[in-house]
Structure formats: C-alpha cells, structure tokens
Image 1: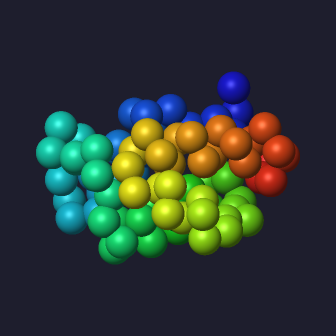
Image 2: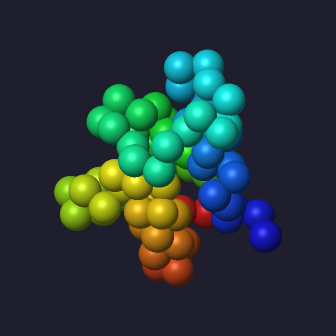
Image 3: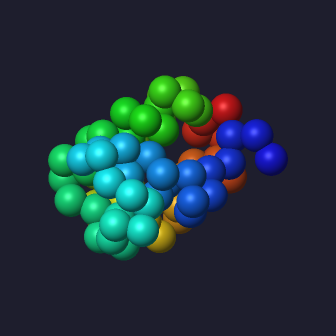
Length: 78
C-alpha cells in the first residue's frame, strides 16, 4: 500500500544515519536519529503534523510505526 512504511523501511532509513548496516540499528531512537528519521519520512511521504505527545512516543521504532499508523488513519499525511 503506497504511503505506508514498514519496520524494514524505518530501519533502513535509520541505518543511513551513521552509515550503519540495518542489523546494527537498535529499537531505541535517540533525539538526533529522530530528527533525521522525521526528515527522511517527510521527504518520502510529505509533511507530518506531529504534536509533542507524538514526538515523545517516537522514541522507539515501534513507537514511530504506531504514530505513523495513527496519522495515516487520521489522514494527516498522504
């Protein structure tokens, strides 16, 4: 389905930060990785309308996927 990111997509994006292999990416996402990841996602999907609660929830790969799923359900990005 277009516009839907999978875990492997998020891991691949995070791997490009620091020139790592996907298997070197951990579940936890630090603040620098999160800034990079949001930029990468917006390049791919368009602007995201993220509030502070959403940003707090994006401290893990699972959290990122949950936030993106909730945004997609609410049609916050196309």
